[in-house]
Amino acid sequence: MRTYSRFLSLVVVGVVALAGLVMPANAQDTHGDLRHLHGVVEAAATGRPVRDAEVVVTWGTRSVRQRTDGNGRFDLRDLPASTVMLRVRALGFAPNAREVELRSADRLLTVHLEPATTLLQEVAVRADTLGERLARVAATSTLDAQALAATRGQTLGETIKNLPGVSVIQFGPSIAKPVIRGLNSQRVLVMNGGLRQEDQQWGTEHAPNIDSFEADAVTVVRGAATVLYGADALGGVVRVDRAALPDTGSLRGSVALNAFSNSRQGAASIGVEGADLSLPGLGTTGYRLRLTSRLAGNGAAPDYYLSNTGFRELNGSLAFGIRRRWGRAELSFSRFATELGVLRQAHVGNADDLQRAMTMAPRDSAFTYDIGRPNQRVAHSTMQLRTVRDFANDARLEVVYGLQYNHRREYDNHGPLRFRNEPAFNLKLFSNSLDVRYTHARYKGWRGTVGTSALAQGNQTLGKAFLIPGYNLWQGAVYAQEELGLGRLSILTGLRGDLTFTRHDCLWRRGYSQSGRDHVMAQHGRFAGRGVSVARRARRGGACRARVAPADGE
Image 1: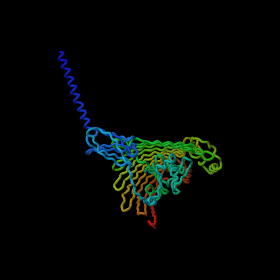
Image 2: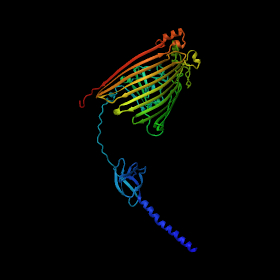
Image 3: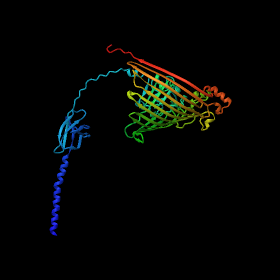
Image 4: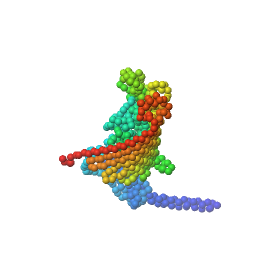
């Protein structure tokens, strides 16, 4: 038994010794297959580490690369046990290349880079200082995102009032309407993200219902180019462009805060966007969400406050979009809601009220955020679907469908309604629009756009006071615009034709008495009749600019 135990012990010792001989050999073989190359890159003149240098190791048809860290170090592992080529490059230094032997062991290197002196030849820049301006025959003026940042939190009219040829009609700090070439309201169109804004713009105290934080650029268009937007754009077009939806990147956001001392106004806007959303059937989808709020009290004059000129505003928008090889498509929803006061001294019912407002000191001139009579409550909701198909040579087809609902309520400061929570004017405007336009490739120097548009609109007048009738409107249009560039000569021409069919409510159906009908017909005769009207409108325009300059050396 003792002999058997000694024999077993000898066997165990032998197995352990054999394993000890075999395992180191295997470990050494494994280490022999892979090598480790590390080190530091330094400037030869100063010995300081070079950060962000590109280190590339090549062997055969394979290569690995790495950039040095803040201390100039690099660390490359799992390299073959062979001779490899090491190349190091950094901005401001001459490239360094060497062969490194890794057959026998790992290597620790210090790479010294010599400074590189680059001699640049002179660069001559020649430009026609008026070339770009001559190319824009449409007489456009644009505020980009950087310029808009200085006026964030204000109304659209306040934002663009400093552009050439633009002024504003202002009713206190909360209402500002753009005026272009002396025309405003229905003679100045507003395009919001490619969709014509359909709201109650006929009143001088009716400001555009647009959140200025949504704008990435605002362009004022005049001249023949306005035929693309509407036959009634006699003054011009205010085009509010939004930033394109992202097609790459994860969630990111922005916060804008504004404060104004005059009316103690505060404005805040929060936006988030990204392209990491995956929807069934659509794949990767870009998105954007924005919420905006504004609050202001009475505006201040040098000696007193302007009574009842505060406002409150709450806006929101949500957009989704895809971008593919064929083009892009976007679906957006937005809502604009505001309640604003109207300066009491400017709200008069007759000549006596006007005389008192001009001669008497204001009775209530203390600062407050409260909004009393007269006041307005306006809400504007929009749904927009826009598709752009790209073709060769910069040609493209654009289709825009829009559904808009505008609800305007105005509360009076005169008569029995001043004591009741019932609007004097209660207007609901529903609009469906479709616009199809094709921009063709340049042909014999000509480049332009042809298109057609359709509008179906209904207006309801539900208030106690009569100002405009309820109506149903159908409108169709065709238009074309062409531009020809002939060196220093540019020609722009446009043509548009509109056909409008209108059916308006009858006063007899609204329960007016005969005397009431006679009074309304006398005041608003062309609106108050019964029946159908058809209107045909056509516009044509053209523009030409040229500049003659002396030849070089004259």
